[in-house]
Length: 232
Image (cartoon, rainbow, N blue to C red; front, side, top):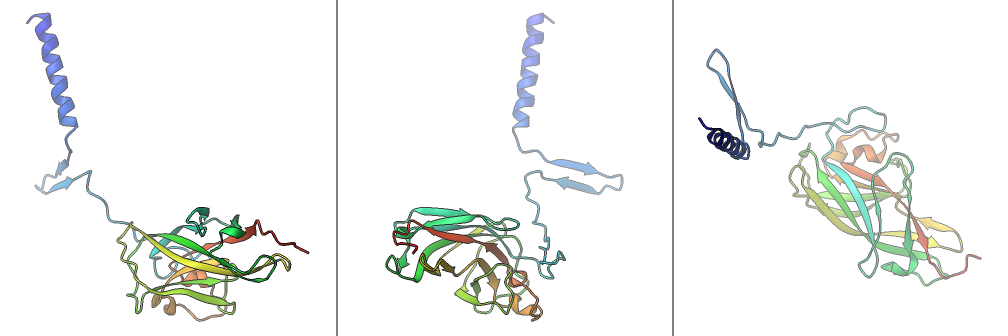
C-alpha cells in the first residue's frame, strides 16, 4: 500500500471516530448471569432529599421545601436598589434611597416607609405536608426570632407550583417605622416562607426559633439614605 493511501485511510478512521464521539453514548455492563445494566449519561439523576439544619445543628424533621436564593429591593421607578443573599452571621447593610420609597411620610416626619421586594426561591424538596390555604410570607422585627417576638404575616394563601429545582418569584411590599430624627428603623429584619401546615407540626416551645419552622428564610438589614430632613 502506498504512503498516500495509508494517510487517506488514517484520515478516514479519524473522521469516523470523531463523528461517533459526537453522538449520545450509552454504556452497557453485562454480567455472567446475563443481567444487563444500561447507563444513560444524559439521564438526570433524581434530586437528593437532603434535610436542612435546625438552629441547634440537628437535621430538620421535615426536609426544607425551598432555598431562599435572594431578596431584591425595588424603587418606585422600578429600579433595582439592592440585593440580599443568605449569609452566615450578620447580613450586610442594604442602603435604600428615601426618595425611591413606594410610600413614606413627608421628610422630617416619622411614619411608615415602604419598598417593593422580590423574593427568589428554588424548590429543593416536595412538601412534607400538603398546604391548606397556601404558603405564607412572614416577617419578624429581630433576627433569630422566637414565638414571643412580634411576628407579622405579609402574604398568605400563596400557590407555589414550582417543580423540583425550579425557581419561584414572589413580589410583595415590606414596611418599616422610620424616623431620621429619632433614629428609628423598626420593621422586618428576618423574612420567612412557610408551608401553612408543616409549620404547625413543630413544637410550640417558646425556645423554637421561627426560622426552624420555615421552608426558607433570610436576614436583612435595611438602612435609609438620602433623607433630606435634619437629624436634630
